[in-house]
Image (cartoon, rainbow, N blue to C red; front, side):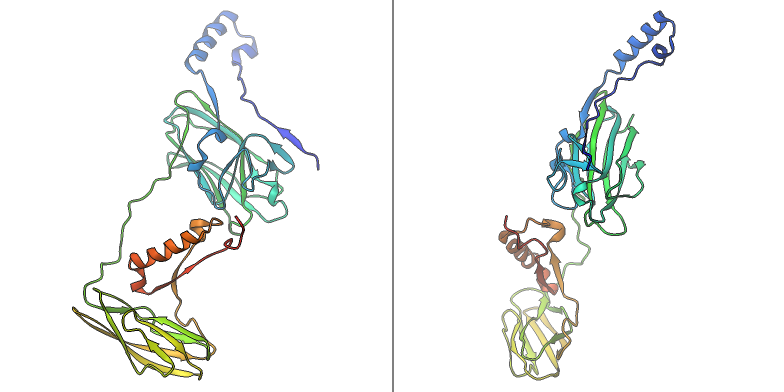
Amino acid sequence: MNIKLNIIAPALVLSACLLSGCNTATATTTDTTKIASVATKTVWLDELDLSKAVSGWEKTNAKRSNGENPLTINGSVYERGIGTHAPGHIIVKLNQGTQRFQALVGIDDEVREDAGSVKFIIIGDRKILWESDMLTSGQDPVAVNVDLSGIDELRLVVNATNDGKDSDHANWVNATFTVVGDSPVAIDLPVPPPYILTPKPGPEPKITGPKIFGVRPGSPFLFTITATGDRPIKFSATNLPEGLTLNEGNGQITGKLTQEGEHTVTFTAENAKGRSERAFRIKVGDTICLTPPLGWNSWNCWAGEVTDEKVRASARSMIDSGLVNHGWSYINIDDCWMRKL
């Protein structure tokens, strides 16, 4: 493979008068005025605080790919730029002090054998200034040259396409800002104020959660009756089949059922404010998960950074927030937990 090293240095644009042989005195006076009024400097994208950037996998890297390799697009290696992963973006505060953004964009060769595909988008003050066609692994980089005059806030976005985000390792290489005022600064993503749409539960008990539960014959039975309302709540069950035991204090039912069949049970939850009842079916057979369980998946929060404490903290939060009383029942530890860190 023919490897080429590419570095684009900032260009000096000569006056059209100088190129076309205008009157020397006129050209000198005019050009001196222009240079004094638009003195520029170059700021590289990889010089910004990339801890503010969002990456769809791992993190955004300066002068390295998302996979921590040299930035490479279709055989060409680049010393400057950033490597990220779709969906990803970075917000840059320009304060109307930047004239232009230039770069080359493309999929990094570290996923050349895979089916990475992305779209690059540049947004200025909430308007799309430029967007690429869909770019795939093995394509040549696409040049970006965008006028940013008067723009206050810039977003550099990489979106996944219809085939999902797998292998979407995206590079912004040789990426520079031409600056005439304040230097661009990467800023935090805006965080919307928290809000709760669900009405606050009342003090009286109300049984929540599934109305049917499936279990295979001979398998361990574990189900918790959940209810909102002031604590303490006393739980009871009428017609609970033999082999199962109810903990009246926390509503947990454990045990084992060995024979196929269906059982109808009546749950009761009672506290000082009132009483709640609900019919419940237990189906013993080959079908389980008869009600889709409510829970939480760690992937979009931790990705590959799974730790024991993070899992325990999430479980505690599910209890402390009261979600468990509405039937939330599991924490799903997604991929990468088995990796040695």
